[in-house]
Image (cartoon, rainbow, N blue to C red; front, top):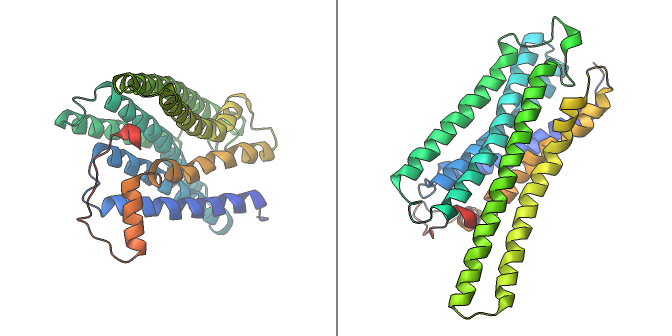
Length: 293
C-alpha cells in the first residue's frame, strides 16, 4: 500500500498519547497514596487513552506491514473499546465530581469506594462489549454496502457509538452546569458569612465557568465533528472527510492527561519528586475533593 500521510499523523498522535498516559498510569499505580476513588477514575481514563494510542500504532503497523482482515478486526475492536472506555471514564469522573459536592458529608465513605468500582466495571464491561462486536461478526467485510465511514464497522454500529457519545456529552453538560451552580452558591454563602466583597464571589464564579468551558469545550470540539459525521456520512464519501474528523477525536486522548492528571497538585508533586530523583511513596498528600481536581 502507498503510505498515507494521514495514517502517519494518526500513528504519531498515538505515540504521543501512549507516552503521556503511560506516565499517568505508572504514577498512579506505583503511588500507594493514589488509591482514592478520584485517582482510580483518572487512572481508568489514562489506561483507556493509553490503549487508544497503542491501538493507533498497531493499526498503522498491521495495515502497512502485516495486512490481514482478522488483524484489522482486532485492532479496530481495540480502538472501539479504548475510545468508548475513554469517553465513559470522562462521564464517571463528572459523576464523581458532582457527587462530591452534592453529597459532601457522605462522600468519604465506603459506599463511595463501592460505587466507584461499580462504575469502573460498567464502564469497561460496556466498552469491551462494543469492541467485541466487529470481532464477533458485526462487520461489513462480506457486505461492503453496509460499511460506515470507518471500515469495517457497519453503519448501524457507528450510529450506536455516535448516539452514545451525544448522550454522554448531554449528561456531562447537565452535570457540569449543576456543579457550577453548586460551586457558585457555596462561594456566595461563604462570601456572605465572612463579609467578603462581591468581587471575590465574582472571581470564584468566573473561575468555575472558565473550568467548565475548558472541559466541555475540549470534549465537544474533539469528538463532536466525528460523532455528527458518523451519523450523516456514508461509506462512499471520500476518506479525507473521515481523517479530518477522526484526527481531532484522537487529540482528546492527548489532552485528557493535561486536563485531568497533570493539573492535580498531588500528581505534580510526585512528578517533580521523580524528576529530582527523590521519589518516596510516603510523600505527604493533602486530601482533596474531586471538584478541586
